[in-house]
Length: 80
Image (cartoon, rainbow, N blue to C red; front, side, top):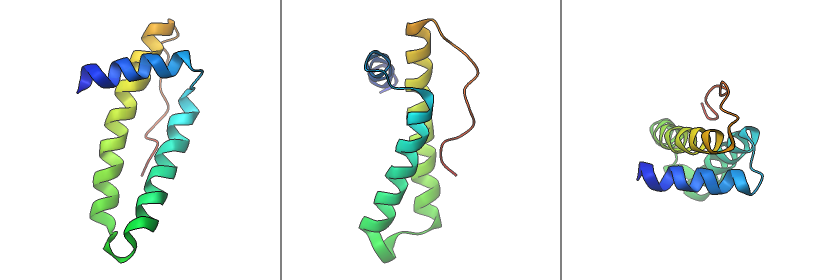
């Protein structure tokens, strides 16, 4: 899975995706899940999805930055 996420991150860099976009997508994902699940959404689900997204986005960001040669300090977690 890490290999696939890294490849995805490299492709996203080629499309012009920037670090700030990962944060926006993380927020949108949690918002969509919260609204889709309604009363079934709770803090435990929010935390779990936030951690999964943070891990996936971190792998993608790092691979994209390495591929572009612009490896720099990444901002903090996109999701709380």
